[in-house]
Length: 189
Length: 247
Image (cartoon, rainbow over all chains, first blue to last red):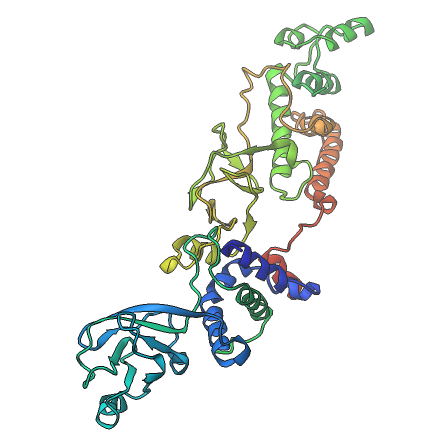
């Protein structure tokens, strides 16, 4: 499905029903694009919160790390960090279950003092991604690439005729959800 | 077959008793059937001393002008299709001043089309059209076909659009080719004669006839301006119609 088709489906589904519903959706071509970023973020959060949808919208992001710090991907949900997973692609002996998310930076800094055999990651100041490898004694030393696997907001294609790279289940959810918003429902983020 | 100016001029001239050399029925028919009529048909000794050749042509053009404007200014007039023309492609915020032939645009604007694909555009709030045009942050990716009018400018979401318009330039009386077609639909030929006749009086001559013709002509104008009731409803209400519905 292309982005153009997706938006058209949303508009048509929103216009189903009686005359009042149709009249309320005259300007939907602009509105549907205006609400799309919010809709996609909400859909990604729903996938994170709903156990049945948990596998959907997980993406692998490569983060270049220098001295234990990298840039967290903008499209990855920080609200879903607890379901995130980190891998060291250059060292397959390191198990992902040995690496834990630490929500508070102060706890992340102190973690190696208590269990240095494990790895930790944390996000500070919105985008600074900190990582302490299980193979290192400190949090400020890791260099190289990491893979972060976590829930990610679907990307809006650059061109309307581009195909969506989202799972079909997500596309259907987006159509239903955006149509409901066009008909007056609130965005639930 | 289209109606020529000559067809109407001879009716007007006979009613105003302006044709010359018509002292017998045969002579009357001969002059009446002359195509095209010339000044010589109005200058013989028996011709009218009140209404001249070019005077009657002027009055016909006056009447045509009134009827043309009645149609042009009534946006949903069914007869508009007879006098519609198109503009050249117009960019965003372009002025709708002339049609593609360079004639001045008069009256209400008609449909708006994408100049490349001919897809019709939908009337939209100017604010929304402007937002699409400015496209902050490249947030709009969909191709939409929308337009808004502000004054004599058209604002739209396409690269260029073409607007259906009515364009009018008064024909020159002296060089008017009487065998050419009138600028309005054939069915308005009688109205054009009545409109011309309504102005055919001088001092206190022909006043009663002119008044009678004026009443008929006025009824035509009124009917034309009320012609919107025969139009099919639009497939989708415009934002203005939406507000009117909600009110």
